[in-house]
Image (cartoon, rainbow, N blue to C red; front, side, top):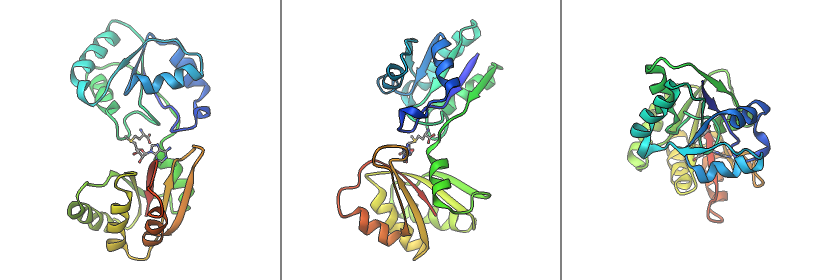
Length: 217
Ligand code: SAM
């Protein structure tokens, strides 16, 4: 069986009982970064062998893992944080397993955009998850203009390196609209800011922005 297993997005306590049982019982765990996942495995006393499955080995390693699944091995797929496939290479392995007609199941758990969406208090019945915004300001503003036409709640992932620049462009496109910026969700320094993009940008610029971010408009 191929198990797609969601793991915590920061707080190690957020691993479900079923995820722990599956990670203990499978033959092999395919991890985005084995060093990162070993912290979680050590926390729960899980000694299952691990192997890496990431952006740059996804084709060769994908074929290898599918081969093992076809031999009847049980494999779990985890990403560094949250739900495999949500903005990480896990998607490629899931797709390959489907093309090979393999049986699979998903052990649900955290995904950062869900926490941010819920904490934003904005309408959750209709939303668009747009992943990461483009790196360059021109492309970013174009993308924001396009997404604005959707007229529903918009959710983006952002890194600490680009958060200030993205907030600048959000301000250009959306003006004074109240947005939510959620930082370090489930972790010790979790912070949820609800204000205009300009105000949030000013607040974050007071010190070097740190951590991982989700933006909800
Ligand atoms: N698979 C993950 C998920 O289910 O949410 C997302 C992986 S994506 C490569 C990484 C991005 O997710 C980060 O840059 C950040 O925007 C967001 N993220 C992950 N963990 C987060 C957290 N604890 N707080 C805020 N954002 C987080």
